[in-house]
Length: 346
Ligand SMILES: Cc1cc2nc3c(=O)[nH]c(=O)nc-3n(C[C@H](O)[C@H](O)[C@H](O)COP(=O)(O)OP(=O)(O)OC[C@H]3O[C@@H](n4cnc5c(N)ncnc54)[C@H](O)[C@@H]3O)c2cc1C
Image (cartoon, rainbow, N blue to C red; front, side, top):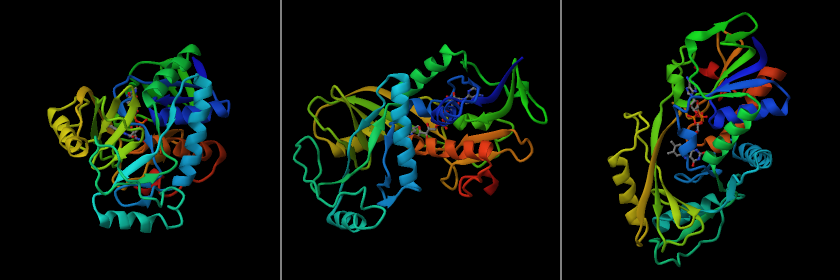
């Protein structure tokens, strides 16, 4: 039997964020993932410190952003891949009233760093935006799929990654350790996204999973070099390809794409752009969202060496590194978890 410090289940944004804490602190670990969930692999990958519906700051935006930017920069070096594409977000205004709300918000203390106080006029005939745009600073896109593929390869090289289902029935819990197949570990971290609904130890937590779908379109005449946010997001990928997203659906929790979601996105897109395009791809995943919109982090109430890192919701790119650090500091350094994210609140 091989002894390690940690077993990690799941290698989405949550799992990778925690593994990076382990590596930085020279802990030994192995990871199991069966690719059954694909929230992280399909994600648009945007990071953005502002809630663009209401013009309010994202919870702990500065702390999250500082950690996240350093985190992805370090991973770019370790994995030797490009991950962070800095790109502004332009919020389309629907009316003069919205313009006014934006400028009022851009004067507020936390928001003034992120919301430009200049009105941007639309000069692109392929885009329909008579009231112009407001620009958000400190935004960008992480290529999450490339990150996950590269991270798995990286762990495979050191025999730390097993591409297989984690079978809960084979977990043996002892006083100060757990055993799983031929591994003995001091701690186990569950980071399964919506897969936690199958986990007998944590499945009663109030996850309210939200399926999301995205289209990839080819639009050679669109020529925008910013992320356009209106009722949908339009994210340039280069080579005239764009992501269009995303939908929200709470009943169908399969990873299958649907005609309904495609039509919903096309209707929104047709109100936003006036040029020709073709749909080249459609993807779907389940976001692990939570009733109170805060992550699910902490220790199992009975089994003290068992933990959860979940509930990253709609903003896994920014929040993942932040909550992973909190969980690591809680386990190894005895620092209390933020009450707002601790599963003890349920
Ligand atoms: C359409 C869409 C667009 C999005 N856009 C953005 C965006 O622009 N910006 C942003 O920040 N966030 C975005 N998100 C949200 C973001 O993707 C999530 O917050 C994040 O992916 C959650 O990561 P996770 O690691 O918790 O879960 P997941 O990515 O679901 O990872 C969990 C992993 O655990 C594995 N697993 C589960 N159960 C088991 C088991 N029993 N055995 C082995 N492995 C198991 C799964 O295979 C999976 O790899 C989007 C989500 C969707 C669906």
